[in-house]
View 1 (cartoon, each protein chain N blue to C red):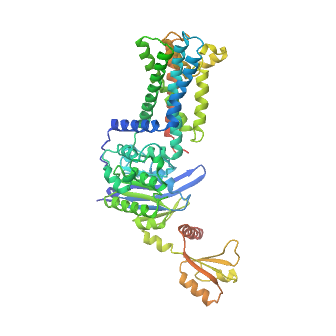
View 2: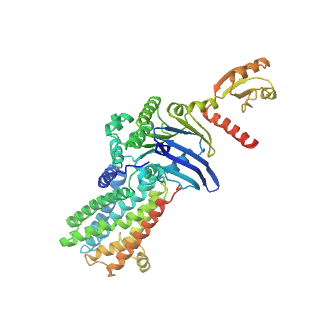
View 3: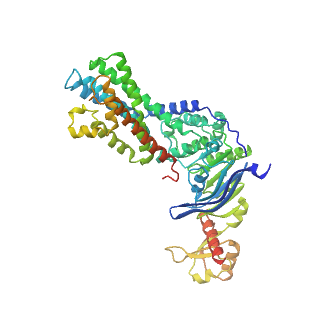
Length: 307
Length: 254
């Protein structure tokens, strides 16, 4: 297969702003067949804007977006696409089955109803009104609606929000199976674990720019920052002078608590001991995704400042 | 990459969409009960129990309350329904799904026709049995047709309201349009009971023109030409369809 045949979606030099606020800057991205691509980023990074642009719901300031060689939002594209958006509630008084059968009718060659049930695990509650569904069940129904047309391209915007662990795991399994069958999936998520488990490629978005792109293991190696927290009466200048400390701070409201961010916790601890800095109440935790972004952003802005 | 552009069956979508929408609202007492009950209750009260002139009033008010009745589901299913679905994000999901936009409109028109038919049958029965309304068969049939199809301009108005209003304010706003517009158009009391100024003003209101059109069937109208009423109703429909299409195709909404 040639390059163009494999590419399901491509974005070139996409720029988008709302009023004077630049939301997406020079986005270049491709999604290939049978690929799961995750877009990671803190709130306000532009993930939903990017998805909405791909769905044809937003205009572009400049750039080109093409899906299956068509404009985003055209009916030909929609008939090959399924989408799971953040929906706060569904029309109350229709049953799970009614919702799914209606959405299946929109597609020429939908997935069989039994297959949809198998993927979504909704069989036991198929006759319940959507009003009575829990948050997690509602998410599963939205997932069912996204996949029920056997789409070639699937958009999942924060698919597992509100799901318990077992529901989340079965959704991951469904995504993997769909991928094996040739579906291309674009996913946004807050959960690093989710992106790690599912994606072939991860794109990190920050303030509307792509700051990192790569396989999950490539990305993870860049954000393996740990946070060391302890109590000490040492001078902050001394701590900030540690060679492996990337960022040192005093914990708000607790003057004798310090926090050190480091990508090599073992070495930092060794340094602290060598300097004979007294400490109590020591904890070391892996940085949350949000912190990792902050770190990458900081690197990003120092890089661009030194250019 | 070439898409195999197989198309789904449009009629099947129209059917399922209409069926889902109608059954959903039949199961929603907050919609179905006031929609059916208000016109029936008002008519029974003003047209029959406290009728000022038993010879003409039951017939006259049966017609105007039927107009009042069919406007309700049109304004509410479109106006409030769309505004709420937009607030939920459900409308967005429908918009990005391959549902043809026509299916959304057809299903709500079907639903409006369904509720309109129920209201018309109930009003006709009450009028004929308790109000001793006596009409020729062609008059009953023509009236029913005028009422059902007369709801279309109000579907257009409702659609525009639904696309512009916020979910939280839509029910109150639609009521604020529906009830005063009904009264000022002479649907609650015969139009010639209203002061001259108000009668002049009624010329601007679409329910007045629909009522006058229907009252022609029983020779109870004010005697203006049919084409005047039809033109006003057509103009309202066109303007609001235009506004709705504009709102629907506007990108970057919210």
